[in-house]
Image (cartoon, rainbow, N blue to C red; front, side, top):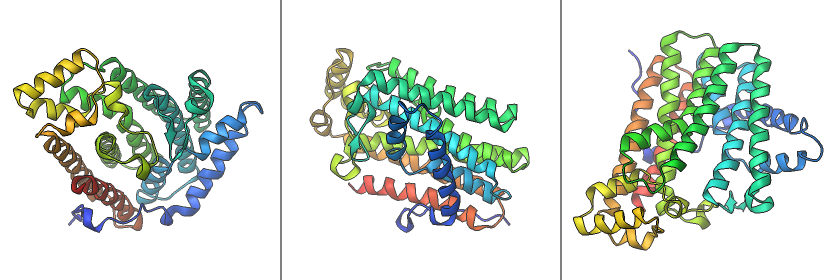
Length: 337
C-alpha cells in the first residue's frame, strides 16, 4: 500500500540540502561557469546577482525528483542551473517593479545600479538561460523551459496590470501566482521526472507537486509581506500594499470586512491611495483573513504530499516530503505571530 504523507508543521526540519550537497555544489560551479560566459564588463554585475540570489530551491527540487524517479544525472544539474538563472532574472525584475531596496540583507540590483541597468541584467539572465537550454538538443525540454519563462513573465504582467483593481477575484489571483511562481517550481519537478524517463502518470504527479508547492510558497510570501519583519527576513516588505497588489489576504479581507470598513478599503483602492498596515490592523477581520490564507496554503501542501505516494521509497522522496514540512513550519510561524 502506498505511503500516505502527513505534513507536520511542528516536526518541520531544515531544508534537505545535505542529502544533495554534492549535486548542489555542482550547480553552484555550473552557475559560476555561466557567469564567466558574459562580457568582462558585464560579468561583475551578474556575479553580484548570483551571490545574492537565494537558497537554490528550484535546483534542489530538480535534483531530488531526479533521485526519487531514477538517478541523478548531469542533465538534472543542467536543468537546475537553467531554472536558477531564470529565477535570478525574475528576482531582478520583481525588485524593480516593487521598488525593493534590499534582498537577503544586501542591496538589490536596482538599488545599487538603477532601474535601467537592472532591467537589462534581468534580460541578460533570461536570454542566457534560454540559450543554455538548447544544449539539451531536446525540443520538449527547450520548449517547456521557454514556456515556463513566458508564464512567469505573463504572471508578473497580469499582476502589475491588475494593481488597485477591485474586480480581481480569488480565481484571478490563483491564476496569476500559478504563472508567476508555480510555473518554475512545476518546471523543476516535471522536467526532472521527464529526464528520468518515467511514466506520464508520475510526470504529471511531479508537475502537480511542484505547482502546489510553488503556489503555497507564494501565498506564504504574500502573507509575510503583511506580517513579517524586515529585520528578521532581510528584505523589503510592505511593497504589495504600497503598489496596490491585491493578494489573497487582502481579497479575503475585502470579502469579510464590515460594510463601513469595506467602503474605506475600496475607496482607498479606487483612488490608488497607499494601503498602510495601520489601517488594515484596525479592522477586526484582518487576522482572520491572514489565517484563511495560511490555511489555504496548508491545504495545498497536503495535496502536494498526496502526489508523492506514486514514488517508491527512498531518501529523496522523504526529502521532498521534508520540503513540504519545512514550508508548513513557516506557515505555522506566521499563524502564531
